[in-house]
Image 1 (cartoon, rainbow over the protein chains, first blue to last red):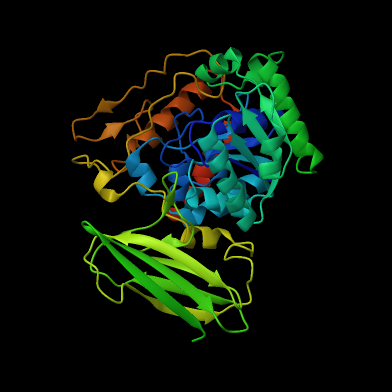
Image 2 (image 1 turned 180 degrees about the vertical axis):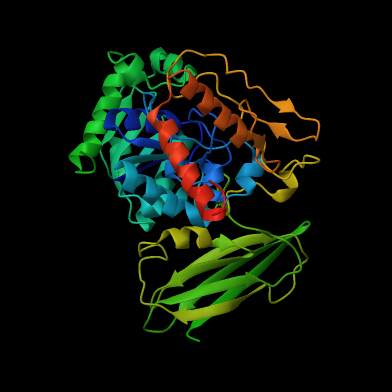
Length: 220
Length: 218
């Protein structure tokens, strides 16, 4: 299963949601934000190397931590050298080797978002209680539809409750993820909050998000 | 051609405002592209700073259903002259609910969506290097272990200028620094009995790759 986590607007928490979903679902988190990678990284081959033909996607996956991650490079030169045509096959390769994959998509609606949506079985839209964020989320939902990536659930980030208007606008159930200092602390350490603070309110919300994904038959 | 185009111009300071209406008098939906014909750059309509759907490369593309009238408008940094815009493509289509109604593939995404890569002019050029710099080490990697000091790697320059690893074996001059550093780290973990399954998988993959590209190497 490949699950694309996107949302259009930057800064709404896509990377956090992707990392947490990967942790709860036992999936590989792939950082597909070629220009502004966010997920934890480490030395060794990364997605820039994969898309430049210097490494295979499977050998670039870092195992052994709280979450298996295929990190992305941080350099402009690395991003420039990427061949987007390789991205779809790279995600498929990781899914074949590991089973479940959660893709942390870039902001915007460019090819590095479209390709993961095209190969994904479903997507999660992340938005926040800001008018521009919801407008971008609606555009992101439309982009996902054009690639036949069904919307499994909406992550309404940094909010205590998800308004019905959001569910109506996006056409999918929405789960609120509360603003929680535990998330900040965990991300600062490069770890998912669900692993470090399993009893935190945000951890419970991420668990419900993962359960919503499972209920769509998308992950074991 | 069953689609007609009505045009209206309003000179407004340094720009010209252009309004148009496409009308389909035929029995089938038409996919129409209208291009600016004025001698200046196009300022397409925007909503909250976002360019309206269908606009790119100085023109707009839309579907016009049977008997339907589709309005559009834009501004152009040019003096008014007629015709301000014209139909450059008009073709019949069976798709009636928008150009994005059919599921698209990864290839479609690469072809149709904007390129996310930074422009080459924005990429710094480092003298004497044709490869990417190694990514900065993240002090808190995904392994969740506390920050640890990287193993010290012994590299010795020999009299002939070549560089050798800790076992005295020569390191190829074309080995990227990031790869050499990774191999050294793996070697250090193996020596310390702390090799991970990821290390083993990586080494096997590297070995297979080396055998593919340099069959003579063992």
